[in-house]
Length: 296
Image (cartoon, rainbow, N blue to C red):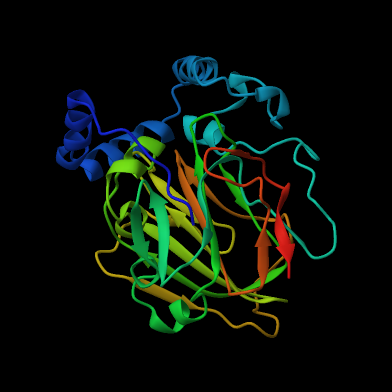
């Protein structure tokens, strides 16, 4: 796992980092969530239009192509795409990318540590809320972290056919997860609020994690709806049946969740099971449905 070299932060950058520690993250996030749910007619449509222009959002690929088609900002932010706007790679033994965005980091889980950026590592156990049984399944495995910017499509999909086994809600901080802070805030992804989803697949276990952030007002899954709010102060665990009528089975490319404003997805794979595509290096763009890697 090769480390990149980053310049020492300037004075202004250090001030920016310090402000993120001092900001009332939860209050800001709650306010953003409330505003994003409001249905203010022409005002909402104007805000959506400005946002789409500022962040160069491609509404032509959306199922609803006009700002006036959305009653609230949240409806716009988790907009559906037109059918076949993201073709799913159907090659046998190929996994597909779960989201549009950019690769933050990817590679091997070495000595139970994942690379965050700039020499910052976080441990597998901490990321998985100290679930030792789950962590053992991914020792010496591989991972990919995908950052979703405001420009991106914010629904998250399945890399492969899978059956849900467990979901864990982990309360935590709400630091922004943009690349700059990922380079300068230690343990960022393992200290932020997150929803951990463990699946059973043909190649063994797989984890897909939705990581919260400042102004990420809520995260949802297709089987449970909105997970937060309300926000529990304790870790909450849901176990699911993997056989029978109650089993939750999702197909490759099928939607599994969504972010209401920004954030990050982390995928974990067991040792010697998945060979990540060599193009998926830090900073490279990802497009949901394209190749993530091959089964070994």
